[in-house]
Image (cartoon, rainbow, N blue to C red):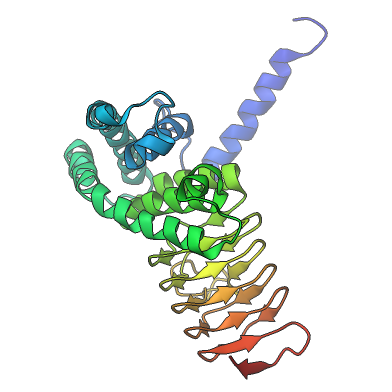
Length: 302
């Protein structure tokens, strides 16, 4: 078969796969690729952006008088496509996590989840409006809310996050992570779908921002590029395995500003109204209405 020993390479790859599948106890797992599709989710998210903000993120030739027609047509096909991705996530969970009583129930469960999600779209839109206003009012370079919607990576990231978070709350972790990673690849902003983020959230510039799974972020918080809200250490069990489901990321209260390059680690609290300067390293709680700077590494009333 040409100058390459294709048969040998194929056989070696099969051996490597079988070794992995044996370790993962999936050697006899025959059948199709029953996983959510990143490509399908990408299309769904593009359509959801258009549904939420039709005149800015929808088709370029859309007219306001046909908004409802466009939304109705796009919403129906998008919800059906989303239902299939939810079903695939449920099927995967049944096979590998065994958390469904009956695999045949997955279609009904998927339909119920997507119906509930669809009913939350108007609430989601209003929540996102607060993020857009926060960006417009928080950046002197912003000339209009349209500029914010069309140009700001932080807004795209929070749209994706707020959708992903809805599915994370339904324990659809794979679907939620796929949505989050699409946003990460588009914007350079890495928000775990488990993070709880209140209204009026603004990420300025955005590149390199990391927000961990168990973060809780209050109202009207503004952060800048390269900020990390991460874990200080990882707990292990008696066998030395990482524990996964415990609070390990910061709590950021209302009206906090965190400037570029700040690293905030562990289950600590950044108090309401605090200002965190650029490039600081914080592993202890910060009192409300205080300021932390790199030069002094001290806190003072503001």
